Image (tube, rainbow, N blue to C red; front, top):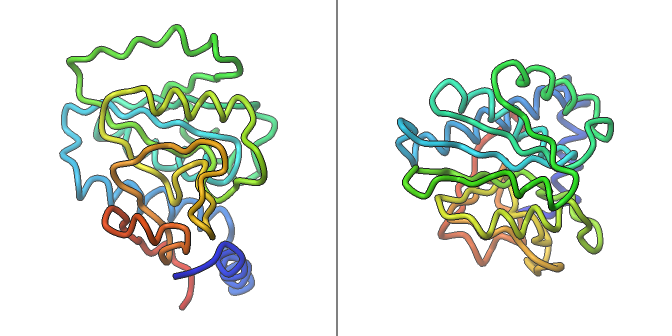
Amino acid sequence: MITSKQMKELERSAMHHGITASELMENAGKQFFQAVRGKFDLKGKNVVIFCGTGNNGGDGLVAARYFADQSHTLVLFFGEKNKLSEDALEKYDLVKSKVNIIQVKERVDLEKFHFQKHLDFIFIDALLGMGINGPLHDPISFGIDYFNSLNGAKIAVDIPSGLDPDTGEVVDKVCHSDLIVTFHDIKCGLEQFQDKTEVVDIGIPK
């Protein structure tokens, strides 16, 4: 198991060895997709990716490119584009020609969505991941509420949003997930969810 501090140190070490943050994000999104494809038949599925403005959202934007080649894919982007990191903005620009990205700023923006119950959905949580820092704020907070209200398979990118990656405590609320695809090593806060967590390699040197 690994703490969030140790994970950040490993990422910095990887960059010191010439692996860029953009490459790690690309690897994370691609390996997440591969893990999901190994668990689910994507044919005929509708994939909806909930993305925040942090690196977790960047991972989700990368994954969206790969899902778009297999399934009908939609990104719900919670927040302001100008808050994306340089690496995440790069991934946003790469995917916007392949996938419909809907910006969500207010709760009322979600009222336009009526997902048809007869369709098969996969909902992906890339809202926050390990980026939690204190109480949740909108639009992430109501994004988690909306994620939990929907019916379909639910998968978390790295860490369910709202879960403390080190203690496993729910800070305020948390995205409920059927599967968690975490990166490099299982985070300490996921110990209680080991039975539904898959670890994937994103190219960080041992």
